[in-house]
Image (cartoon, rainbow, N blue to C red; front, side, top):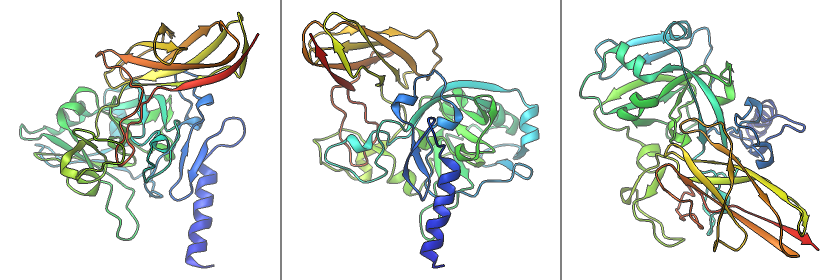
Length: 369
């Protein structure tokens, strides 16, 4: 078998293992690496089941052996550490229910088209992550005052001459709510989601959530390299669609923008007969204050009902009961407002990497008399 054929078969095997089949399904975006998104009509629960949670990888990883894995903590610390899973299990446990969204979620909806995985709207999920607070790990190691950034490293070594996926996060963010997660929704962290441990950074885009975590290293300066200095950056002052920027004219992608999605909408309706629209909304703010629906292209808005379940940096389920007043085509548009007063925009800001798409979602259906 040729090398290309071997890689193709290997990618197919990995994809078959990672992507569920049947009614509980993911949409495979490519085979090498395995990238798969969740259909919006499957994202109807407050917590997204593990087998429905989207998968994002830069390349096929080397998954560490749980028996020999250890987290190295070095750099600007008084006491460098090597923590096994057993060591982490003996430390105080913490959980956070929060949204994980790929920075490129919605990329395919940007016009003009931008390169990269052409995600629809399903590279997002809400899960309960459990493990050890980064704050507790760094306190145990004796964090030095000069540390300003925590460099994170995983075991997914890149192929050939591809730059390594190295990232760093401001130390204040990780001290506030970062978690080294070893469990997801009450089960051991799956391999596709970074087992044995991954970094959880609530409210921030998924590029900070290092999978297959092997090392945390506090340092005075931010990490360097392609995935910090070129990729995962957003224009400081966005321009018109199609206008590209130099890396120094952009800042790193951090907090998630306020956003809503529609997961359930009618296919048809009758005048005077109510129908129900459902979905979810989230923000890095960290909460959603309200969700609104308009049937006149944003001239007037009516409040949707928010679900009772919500945690900081998690999504809110919402529903809206709508009674059509006239026959024809009804188009309902949705927007969310977060706890900081940020309002979801009609149009997402175009950027050359297609990050953080958050335009109003809409649903159209025929109304009969």
